[in-house]
Image (tube, rainbow, N blue to C red):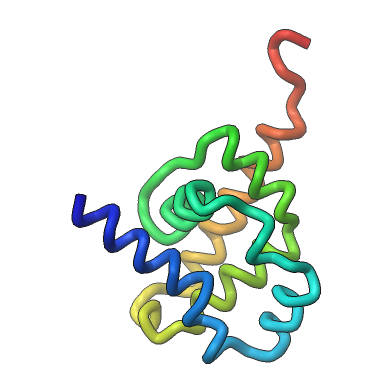
Amino acid sequence: MASLNVNSVLVVLFLTCGAVIATKENDQIIKENNCETKMGFPCVLEAFTSIFETGSISNKCCGELVMLGKVCHSALVKRTLENPLFKYVSPATIIAQSIQTWNNCLALIDSPSPSA
């Protein structure tokens, strides 16, 4: 249960506190594209866990991530990396994991369903 609380705090920071220290470029992209309103909280949590920790992302949340769009996805990840809480993580590793999560979701959403 404590893990859920920590994840919840991290996601809230991912969505809010990072804005204070984020670069103008990422903030502008996020604001202009309404990035923070395009995914439901449970899917934000799944995507965050998939990228910043060790976790998987469901088909439903992959759909929401793809609908969020690559521009928003990248800007939100970059803004999160600017938060001092993440100063000890490797940006290269997180960006690589972010790209992998994006590509996996895109392939899942683009592939025809077995019933088709």
